[in-house]
Length: 155
Image (cartoon, rainbow, N blue to C red; front, side, top):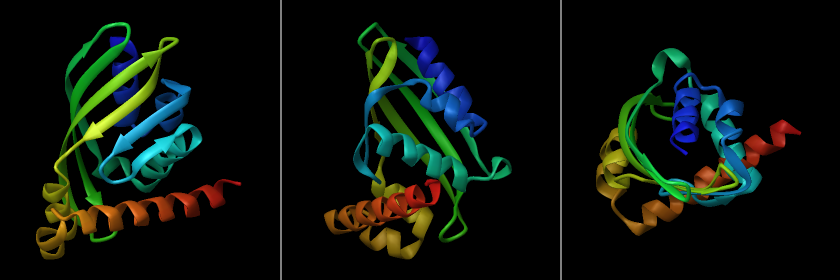
C-alpha cells in the first residue's frame, strides 16, 4: 500500500489528477474540513477541480511519514500555494489517513487546522471567523457549490 500512497502524492505534486484518481477505489470516500464528506465521483471531481485551479509554478507539496499495512495507512503532507480567491500565500499542514480495498484507496481523510488555514487564506476575516463552526459550515457550503458548478462544466 505504500506504493499507492506515494503514487498519489507524486502525481499530486505535478497536478496529474487522473493518475491520482487511479489510486482511488470507485467507491472512495474523501473527508476534510473544507469539503466535508464526498463520495465516489464527487471526491474525484473535487481533486479535478483543485488541480485544475492550480498553476504548477505556484504549487508545491511535500509528503513524509508514510506508514501502512494492507488495510490502513497514513501520511503527513504540506501544501504551499496561492489561494485563488484572495491571492494570499498558504502553507497548509495536513495529516492524512487511508483505508484500502482491492489494493486501492477506499477512504481518504485529511485533517488540518482550519483556523490556521483561514488566517492564511483570508487574512483578518479568517483570523476572526476561521475557528468557528459557522465558518466551517459556510466554507463547506461554498466549496460544494463551487464543486457542483465545476461538475456542470465537465458535461
